[in-house]
Structures are given as structure tokens and as C-alpha cells.
Length: 129
Image (tube, rainbow, N blue to C red):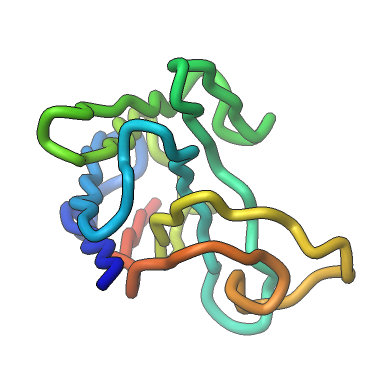
């Protein structure tokens, strides 16, 4: 069975750093596009954060570009998200996804509603100012 398990979330002060990890199993990790998404508190919509393709190509949301770095270790089946210079607006539940694709059906507070693919349960990041 496909499993994605996130870890590394914590409460930090603004300006601090965290490194999230997502351990994956049950599917061909090497050939998969891995991504990080986040669900802010309340009814704010799911946000794309970053993806890394099988060939190492990376993409970032404008809001995190220059502060976050995605990477992968195929030998360990793990994808990482290094988050530096954290801001209060980064507070959210961070979700790892494998081969997520946008359905093209608007927005939702829940990432699973608007994206296909396999998802973890998430890890909470709280940034206080």
C-alpha cells in the first residue's frame, strides 16, 4: 500500500528554520513527482508550495521562493522541505503528495479535494511573530 509519512513540523519564531521530511513507500518513488502543499488554519484554501520531478526539476510558489528548498533522496525514498526565514503566514498543515495533479475545479481548504495523487496526513508548522 502507498504510504506517505510527514515529520518535522514544530512551533518556531518568525525568522527561524525547519526541515520537513516525507518518507514514502509502496510505489516507484524514483519516477514520481513529489510535492509539498499546505492547508492554512480556518477556511483558507489549499496552497501549492513546491514540487520536485523525477529528473530533479523543482518548482516553487512565489510566496516561498528564495526561502524554501525542496530535495529528494531516492535511495531513502524521502523528500525534504528546508524552510528558512519562516513567516507567520507560513503557519499551516504541510502535506506531502506523490504525483498530485490539479483537477482544475476551483479551490478548496482541502488539498485532496482539488488534487489527485497520494497524500500523507500532514505535519503542523506554526510560526509566531
